[in-house]
Each structure stands twice: as structure tokens, then as C-alpha cells.
Length: 300
Image 1 (cartoon, helix red, strand yellow):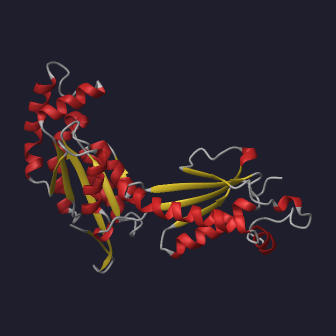
Image 2: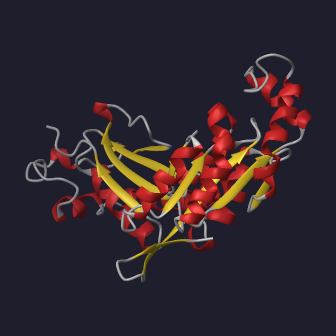
Image 3: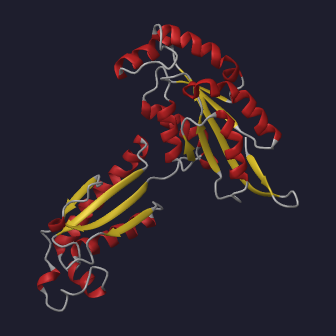
């Protein structure tokens, strides 16, 4: 379903997707909401049902700034969860179309998960996990019956759950592309902590030792010409590009939302910058979203 924002004269101004995630404890709701975050949804975990219509009204007034929303509401809300049906009715009254995603799993799988994580079932404060699950299934029977989508996670890995959510809820039914961040850095200042791949180009001829190039950066044409005049630069870059073009589809298939590739030289000012620029140009030409960062370019 789609949520429509009506303008002052009743015309459709923007379209919104509003997903309410609920289901059995241990069925993967926390994993699911992280998947929605990766898809660009505005996410809230463990929102009391009575606040759902209030948030929907705020979204309606955002003039399209918030157009994808995923909210988790479940029995962790205690007595407040009983008002979920009332909240859904209110959404319908204010014209906010919504979808309910219900996650479930078999009792034996859920019991094993609780034991592995050493967590207590929310309804098993007194009694066994089995009794808690029995109570929970009874409490959730009505909302389960009106769910738009049921996903049984009994035999799904976290990655498989992510792929299923992407297939259903990604914008326009398409999986979003991986975001590639290219970081030029200097080893003398340390390796970027968030780097997935790190490449060392300190073996390339260094413009730092050329007097007229020293104050310039890899963004300057003269430095670029110097770095790329050596055959070893082309040999290395060809192998680097081949590796990265092999890896990116593998990371996309695995469901990785962002890939950080760090290329380092001594100071992060010349060689690393020149190679990041060239790699970014090629990847952008292949329609990958690319962000370039020159972490140490301003350092002395």
C-alpha cells in the first residue's frame, strides 16, 4: 500500500510507504529493522502503539521529507501493545495507508534462539519459554490475521531475511546499490578505522620529492601527470581495478550496504589522491554511487 499526502486542494503531493513490523519475540524483528535502515527507511524500534498515529501525522506534515517509514511495535510495549488495533484503526481514519509485516518462527527454533542468546522471553517472567510463546501467539493472533506479509524466519539466515525484505520493500521493487566510499589517506596518520579494503601505494614514485610538486595535491594536473607517467602505476591500477570490479558484485549479493576502500600513501596528499580520483571516475562511469574523501590532504 502507499500513503498519500494530500495538498491544500486535495491533490496528491507525495507518496509514502509506511510499514509496521511486529511478530513473535526472537523471530528477527531487530534484524528486519536494520534491513529497512539500509534501504533508507526512517526507522523506530519499540514504538508504543498509541504514538504510531501521532508519528504518521508528523510524517504527513513533512511535505514528502519522510516518505519511507518502518516502525517496530511488539509485546515489549507491555500493556501499551494492547492498543495496537486501536492505533491501526486511527491510521485508517486519518487516511494513512499502512502495511503490517509479521515475523514468526517455530517454537523449537525460537526456544533455541533464546537459549543461545541467554535472553528471557518478555512473557516468561514466571514460567518456561514455551509458556511465554504460547501466551504471545494468543495475544498476536488478531494482528497476525490482518498482516499484509508473513515471513517465517525458522530456516532463514540473517542474510536471507535481508534479501527477502529487499525484494519486497526496496523502492520500486529494486535493490538499492551499494555505496562506495573511496578514502585517500596517509599511513603516517594511521589507517582509517572503518576501511573494508586497504591498499598501500607507497611503492609508487613520490611527487613529494619534486620541489615544484610538493606544495600541490593529487587533484592538481601536474601531480596527476607525474603519478601516471610511470608504467608501474598502470600495472598496479589495472590489477586493483580488476580486483575491485570482481569484489563489488560479491558484496552486493552478500547484502553489504556500504563499501569503504582506503588507498594510502605516505602523507595522503599526492599518490593516494590521484588514484582515488581515477578509481572514482571509473566506478561512477559504471553507475555505482561513489563518495570520495581526502582525509589527510590538508595536513602538513
